Length: 172
Image (cartoon, rainbow, N blue to C red; front, side):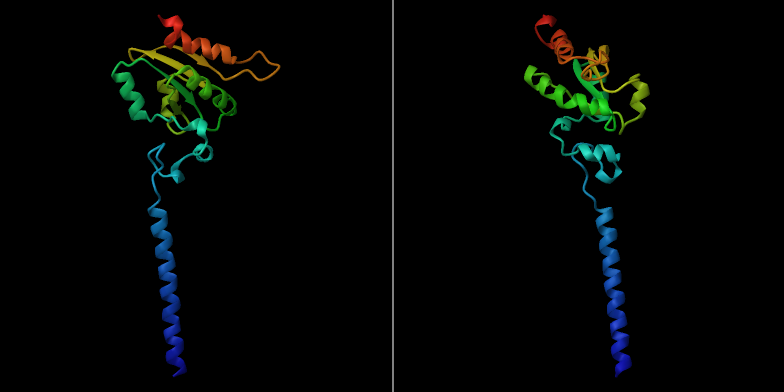
């Protein structure tokens, strides 16, 4: 009788282990797709994962959308950044509210997730703010906001003038 009880308990333990492993495998394979990037968060660069809930990084444009804008010969701004770039992380929280204030739609393209675009868009430094007219890039500002006490980089007024040049009073 004792032997039968031990034998049954052995099967119960094996059953529990099988169920637990099954649950782990199911959860790993069933990870939900991130709405911003169209792929599971586990497939994103760790620096990108840190920014997923940051309100300043919510206007993400994916390669297919960017390529379509270019192919359709649209006029548009695009903010090219890398999620692990310190200059981007300093610039974005200042630049995105400025774009919103000026009524400029500023899609954000994460070069860290789509690294082939560094070469195809000829981006050497991040962040880069670019303007496309008729699907062709006409001008860009490479680099972020100047750190206090330095002359390297741009001011918010420089960015404002860039936006106004192509969408505001200066473009008329």
